[in-house]
Image (tube, rainbow, N blue to C red; front, side):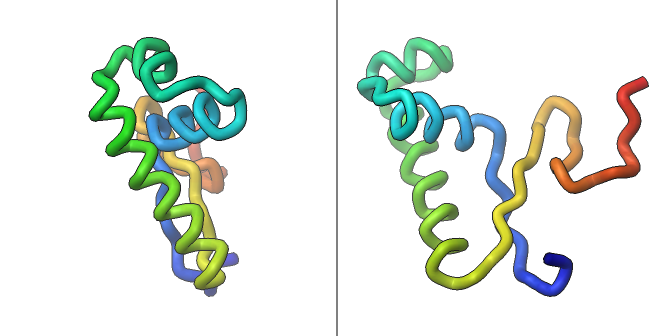
Length: 81
């Protein structure tokens, strides 16, 4: 995977996809759950969907990024101390 181009999916982008596309929430309901405006949710969702489709169609690696921890999911050097 190190030879593939990486695309970073932010935590809020993942959460928007999970709530709307996986759980089937309406955008307004998901926006309330995420404590953002409906327009912000729509913008985040659009960006997330673009990244996922870009990776699927262009053979890129989708990397989950946690903004709270500041590390990617494939960063094995991070300890939980």
